[in-house]
Length: 301
Image (cartoon, rainbow, N blue to C red; front, side, top):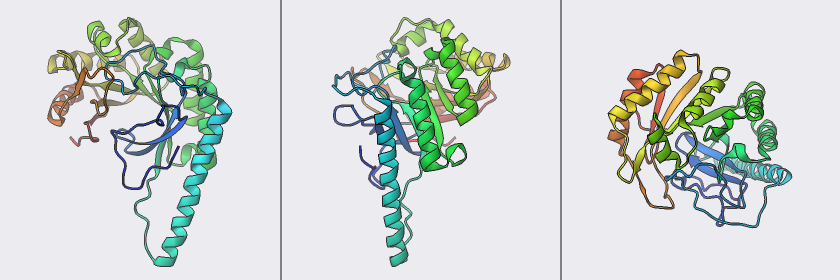
């Protein structure tokens, strides 16, 4: 685990150590708009109930196991190193009269990693450790750094998970980025690579969002001969509009395309113009902010 090199960040690099085993990994995130501190609950193997064709996590096997105390130590070590470097640079600037404009603030601590976080038996403990680290080093929920969960949304069907998430939303202002890759069963099956029921997934997302706010995240890319088009995006917009009309609290919609390699080399990103075209269909159909992310970052509308 190392601090990112100042000014060298790339949204295409989300490495978790040479063998995928890092528990804490700093990355430059398109959607966070800067430095994101990733937290990985699966250092020993990829663990997910989806097989998304665009997933950048290549299958691997490692000997390291996740331990909550190790996560705490690694977060503390990372933030202590940042603090030491920041103090040293400030002292140097005071002596030289320079102004350190290259230092990147931490935008969020993000629980994601090599799979679906809600499947981990350590999920609740990990969220608590991340919240504690944010209070210790970054000022807590009011310090300007988000606590983010990236999830494929299947955990919303489990009462224990939803109760935990609701508590974290209330106590720690957890921001939940909930995947919804598609507007119908066929589209969803292509993008998830699974047999998980589409209607049940949508219903569980909506049920949770009627109680707590979420961000909807949707990948738009080519998979073989499949590609999103305006007609499909109209169905997607109608789906979200229906959820909103029934009381779902959707803070934002994130439409993003592929930015990193995928194991099967089956997928290709969409260009910025195409992304904006598809996003325009959604913006017309829903009354919440729609943010659009191309390969290299957020695309201004």
